[in-house]
Image 1 (tube, rainbow, N blue to C red):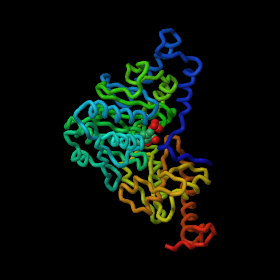
Image 2: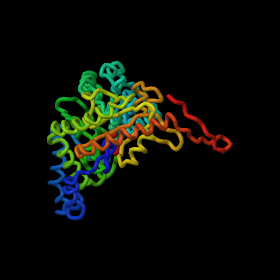
Image 3: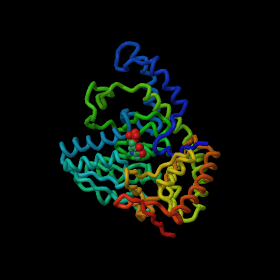
Image 4: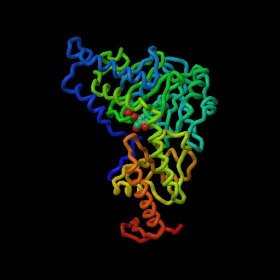
Length: 404
Ligand SMILES: Cc1ncc(COP(=O)(O)O)c(C=O)c1O
C-alpha cells in the first residue's frame, strides 16, 4: 500500500477536474480575448468557473476575483502593490504580519524591508496563532496593511480572522489573508468575515498546480504586478489559462459543495489517526483539534529526529513532511514549532500528516501500524546504537550516543 499524507503541500487532481479541463486543451483552445468563435467558445466555461469561485467564498458582485499563476503571485501582488499605492505613493510606512506566514509572504516582507518599509512580525501564542488583540496593539496610524494567514500550512491552526478583519475595518487599515490552507478545507464566507484581499491556490483543493486567484473586496484599486495586454480588466495581464481556470472552478465547487459533511469525514479519520499516535509515550500534537483544519496533525515524538522518521515512513511508502527544510548538512528545526516555544530538540521532531477527502480508513490503519513500528525502531537506534562519525582528520571514529 502507498499512502499520501502530504496534502497541505499539494493534492491529487480530482479525476473529475481533469475531465472538466480536457476539452480546453485541444478542442476549445482559442484565445478568449479573440473576437472570432474560437476565442469566444471558451467564454461560457470561463464565466461558469469564475461564478463557482464567487459562490465558494460567498463573494458579492461588487467584488473582484482575479486569476493568477499561484498563491505566491497573489501574495506578492498584494504586498508589493500596497507598498506602491500606500507607502511609496501615500503617507504610510508600516506592514503588520506574523512570524509564521508562508515564505511567499515572509520573503516579500523581507524584500519590502530592504526598500525601507517597517514590518512587524507578530509572535504566535503556544497554540501557534496570533491573537486579535495582539494585532490591534501593533496597528499605528502609519500601518498600510495587515497580512495574517487564515490557517497554517504547518499546524492547521485556524487564526481569528473574523476578529482581526473587524479590527482592521474599524481602524481603516487594509487586511489581507493568505487563505490557501482554508479555502476548500473549512467554510470561508466573505459576507461574514471582512477581508480586503484573499489569496487562493487550486492545487491545495484537488485542482491543478499553477493557478490561483486573488479576491479583491469592492473591486478596490490595486496597482497590477503583471503589466501587458490588459487581460482581466487590466488587473492581471497574460493570456487567460482557460483549462486551468476551468479546473480551479470545478475543484472549488467539488471541495465546497458539501463542506460540512466532507470535513466531518476527514476529521473522523484524522482524529482516529491522532488518537492512535498519541498512545505512544512522549508525543504531543500542536494545537487544539477544534481550532485546526480537519485534515492536519503536526506531531512531535521526543527522541525521534523528523528527517529520520520521514525516511522510515518513505520506506513504508508513506509520504509525509517535516515542515523543516533539510539543508545539505544542517537539519533545520521546524520554525513554527520554535515560534510556539518548543525547545530546539523538540523542534527537530515535528512530523506533519495532512489528509484529504481521498484518504481511506484502510490507509489510516496502515499508517498507524507503520508509524508505531517506525517510532520503536528509531527510538531504539537513538538510545543504543553506536554511530560512525568522521573526525576532522577524515578517519572514522566510533562514538556512543547517550542513553536517555
Ligand atoms: C499558506 C500557503 N500560502 C501560500 C502557498 C503558496 O501557494 P502556491 O503554491 O500556489 O504558490 C502555500 C503552498 O505552498 C501555502 O501553504
